[in-house]
Image (cartoon, rainbow, N blue to C red):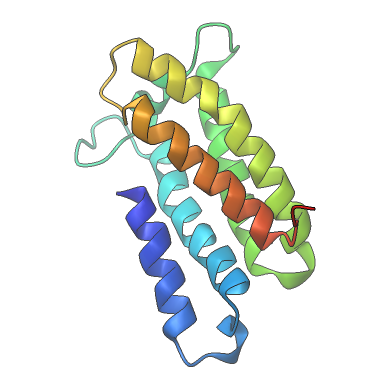
Length: 147
């Protein structure tokens, strides 16, 4: 589902006639920003909301070794939103892309923990490749190239 948000947003930006989106890299940066706004929203949704992941669902994903799980969920939501803003602004895109790649790596243990604990989350066979895609797009948006 979230990958679809990323793909549709990226395509919408790239296919628009707006000069700002005249490259795939910039369109992907904005598409990733849209995806991050969607995913970050779950970090702040009250527990009573059941049509999408909510704050309580996110807290349950936090591995036991992480202190202050509720605070960490709020913090990662804020970091995702900050990363989205950073991707949209040209002069901060490189730093935002690098920081988001690191954040995606840092969030992977929560996804692994939740899947292994039997929670209703994206299965690892799907989630790990998705994380790799998010990391790759964040680094590509940042202008980082393989040598």
